[in-house]
Each structure stands twice: as structure tokens, then as C-alpha cells.
Image 1 (cartoon, rainbow, N blue to C red):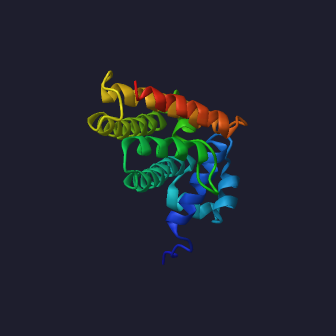
Image 2: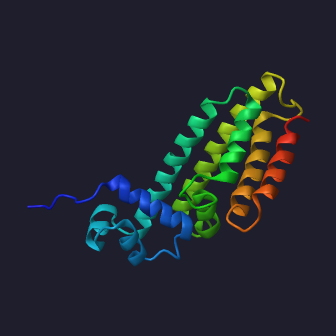
Length: 192
């Protein structure tokens, strides 16, 4: 007779996500995962197969987590400028009890060149961010907040590049004041 799981899969996956997000794939050992997730090694293998599969599921979990938070914040924005400001603030300030930066950016930098699965997930996530940004820029262009000098998709690519840089810098000791200055100048470029 098979034993029932003694843990909630989504809870331990969230713990794995935060550990991978903070430490990266290579630095996180199976012992680290077992200890941090609070489950037995056998349970980890039975549920997630191996470290790589667990990592890919953790990346997916991060995507769902991030998308939910962005959607909630953007829904409250009354203008396109407020929406873009929310995205920058979300990147710069992060959330309490989460590592700084972005798991997609961290994973892309660490692994994408040699791991096709991670590359595909990062590229897909980046495309979703650019689509979201393009929709916000188009909204701002239509209501006169943002310049029409560039296509919304081009501005979205530019904004995403700035956000990716901020996500990397957020993992360093660079001050939030500097990150905010960069965000402010980047937002200023939307006005033309």
C-alpha cells in the first residue's frame, strides 16, 4: 500500500522556489533542498523526480507568483504611467520575505546558455513581460500620456531591458535611491 504524502506539494515547492531564487541552481544542493523544504529525500525524488525537474517547476511557480502580483497591482492603476511606475516599484522594492531580483533573470544568467529548458522558460517569461509592457505603453499612447514616436512593442523592449538591468542590480549592494533614479529616467523616456 502506498504511503500518502505528509506535506502539501505547493508549500514545499514555494520553499524550493525561494531557495533556488536566492542561491541559484548550482549552489543549491540536494541536502539544502531537503533541509529547507522540510521533507525526506525520498519524498523529494518521488514527487519531483530530480533536482532539475524540481528547478523547472520552481521556475514555473515563480512565474505564476510574479504574474499574480503584477496583475493585482496593475488592476489598481488608473493611468498607464501609474502602471509602469508600479512595475518599476515592484522590481526595486520586491516583497517582504523574498530574495531580491528576479528568478528568471538569475536563471537565464546562470544557466540559459547551456540548458535549453531554462532558456525556453526565460525567453517565454521575457516575452510575457514585453507583451504586458507593450499593452501598457499602447494604453499610455492612446490616452496621450506617452510619446507615439516609437511603436509600443519597441518601447516595451526598451523598458524590459531597463527592468532586466534593475533586477540584476537589485541583487547587489546598489542603493534603492540609485535604482529609483534609473527608473525615473527610463520612465521619462516614455514621454518623448
